[in-house]
Length: 104
Image 1 (cartoon, one colour):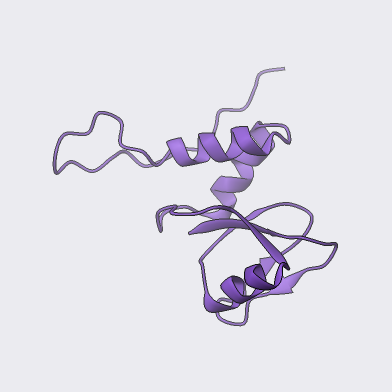
Image 2 (cartoon, one colour):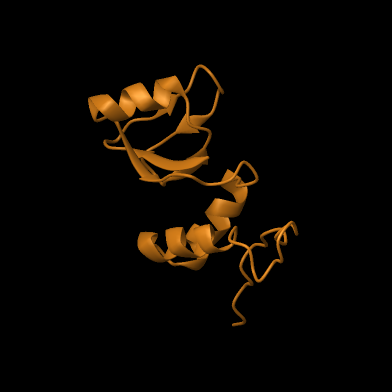
């Protein structure tokens, strides 16, 4: 999975996955030939790569909202959610969870 966003005020619909990539926020999507071609043309900015298949746009959106628009913080937090936390050899890392909501 990757995190990508269009470089202008337009939306793209990936014909391979039928997933939208928009200018309003970065999206967590599956990398495809279409996205690679659009990135090469400068229509799409790839923000993060090498995310596991378990990464989802819904989970990514929660991290982005929690970071209050700080993209670097959101990406770092999101990536760290998928890193093993002291998992022994052969053990599976725990499933990532959405960030906790702040109490008012």
